[in-house]
Length: 141
Image (cartoon, rainbow, N blue to C red; front, side, top):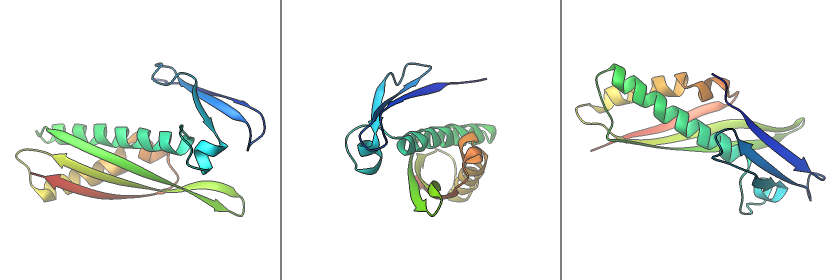
């Protein structure tokens, strides 16, 4: 399976503007720029898109692991905070912190924590990131 996305950039780094699109059309010519990435202006940026991808991937991986154990979640809610740090050789994504809350009937916290840890390590987005990945996982009743 292959999925694609594209970006077009015009201009220099600080005053230039770009657009991001996805194969599915979920994003079509979504604007982004220096101000949306580094100055908190409205719009998207690569780091939040990575966060969305990681949160979605993790949630699906956890659902799969639970299913293999004969469990089905009523809900899995995941957020991802992506850290972009500047170093001597430029910027790097150095960390991602996942926060997950799940409602899963007929399970206990120990089984949930084990499944969440397995999902964190095994989801494809986790595997592609060269960053420290941490997690807080809460089983809700």
